[in-house]
Image (cartoon, rainbow, N blue to C red; front, top):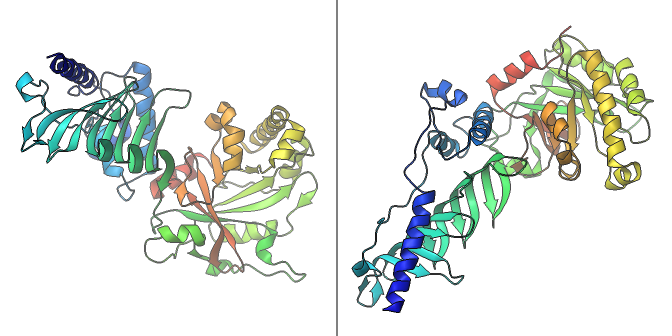
Length: 440
């Protein structure tokens, strides 16, 4: 009898926890503007979220829909989420005493209560003695979905009291495969859509198609390494390869136009790219949007570098924003000090913005983002980011451009070329050119 009462108590506790976290959705009237434009419907979220969380959710979803369309993996899942749909496993809300663990021929069958190896209670549905679906509360939230060997396996969702939500594929109790995760707690609330590996978020696996907006960045190295310079054949420019890692994600054969180009102009306070002026003229003659970048030096001041860049760079109407290329080594940062480095970087940014009328773009690599930029919320918030990350996964960062490989091939240019992709599609790129470029 005591054992039976214990099971009843476990059942009631589990069902109460599950009911608290997985009640039928109650909706507010909050409209998600970007989605509403797509299908003229209002999209709502659970009123379990605070007004601040609702605002964060709206901003995250607006950003996602501004940068994605139906071609992207998981788009339909995000649309369903924005509409207030949540994955739910249906099991009886009340389990009569006579139904606590039905058995058929010595095998559990139907609604059952199971304790896993960690002592967590699972209320679920068994078939042929195997738990297939159910609910499992723990100290942080509740999992509901498919099981195998009493572990989360297959499609499932995890909900937390603070409004957090994950839906996707699980393997051996860990997120593994494609999923969507909303995290509203902490200092950096985010919507993650993409691939997980053994519980770790990898990023969005981008598919390269002709609808993407591709571009290149060039310097003196695209003119050869010998004494006799190699010309760029501007009329033949065509991206034919997106690097060894990226080539796995190409839909069909890579054959993309060059839709933008960034050209190195200066470095430190004395170095200039002797090919810059001619390359600029050739790109502008063909109507290719152009930007210039300055390679940052840790040895000279921000104002001196800004003045050198401004003196030797062309800025005309419609040009892309100027770029500060920041690639110091860890030892260089430690020697100078991160605070002093960012003080000088801000001086450069403010001086160039005053002169050109637009905010510069920050070009950084993943190491710099992880170790340094993540601690500068104002820079992440106020400036567009262009990141170098040579991976099959799109960087988990709000960004304008992504340098996806250093070993791409472009018809008309000898040797390897950096290939970049704009974070968005044609409409978003046109908006970027209209709102972010230099006005003269």
